[in-house]
Image 1 (cartoon, one colour):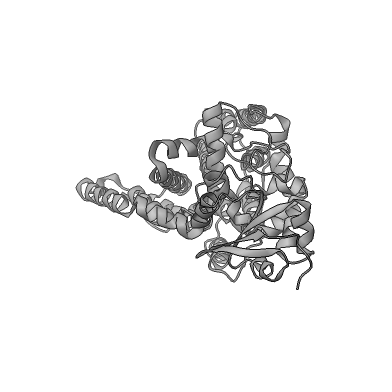
Image 2 (spheres, rainbow, N blue to C red):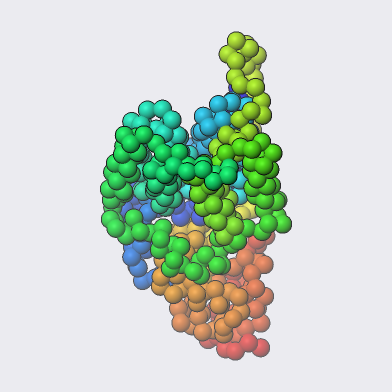
Length: 475
């Protein structure tokens, strides 16, 4: 019954998340793989990167996204999102219940995952990656407390994970932490490390080695295995400029929740004289560092912290007593929950409205109707939709920050978009004939006063400028 309530919560939370700008290029990539039966390893969508090499590290997730669209259109995509959102919450509920031994406390842990996930729910491959992270934690818990054969589900898990999302690297780190701590035994105040029986530790070490080998079941090889490290170490512009990679604001609601969760753990350790196990401390430190550094990683923090807090609060409610269950009442609640979830699911008109609000739909229709020609410069956030809705117009830049940073385009565009360079330099270098910008873009206020440019379309959220003559200096 509590699980069915999580399904309702998933639908209510995800139903308005249909306007993520990166969804579109994931969808288009999935379509290409589906129709051509090949996985692209070069940039196919922009004219600025000159078909630069590209690592297709999310190709399997992208195929699933396009499969959902092919089966059900926009509602199919929303169903994909609701399914994986509910799956993460329910798997997290199972994980927290396993840690705490209490269905009620486990449900509280699932709510922590929900709170931390609200900034990251989108039709993007990360949803599959985070679900697999929860599944990995389940396997590690079952293998460490029950039958160690559960560890041998890790290699096939990673063989799938490496082709779905770069979070597989975090998964390897998590398994390595458990493996390392399994050989240590000490007590330091509330911090405890308990050595496992040798056979169990060896089985986890073997499974970890096989999991690392399984990472090479991918279409690129070593480049795909090392891609997450490349992201963190060699994509400084994307990490510093893209909003979701910005540091967490501790004064924001999620920031306050982050501080509150950590404070709750400290208070429980002090008030109840509880124990904190070494792997839990290490994973909490990793999750907290990720969350503070990048707000999108609050999702990961929630997955890592929820089972720990659930175990510490295990005695908060009485344990489950099957004799006190009320099957009929539970069945009514489950049925009512499913009805609510069905009614809350957005219809096609609602989804179209979300697309129109968040994307330059009318502007693209104008471009096609008036047969605008030549190279286009587009806002960063519009690139994904243009890749899907107007593939005949190669984009200048889009949400694939990696390939644009590798080629230097992202730095050039960032300086242009924030008025840190002469606008004509970039426009002339790439032979731009028209620009599709958001109405609130700084350059949308500059182009009207530049020689050789005029606005030819103005919509509710976007504006199009066309070159009329050789661009000169600002007036």
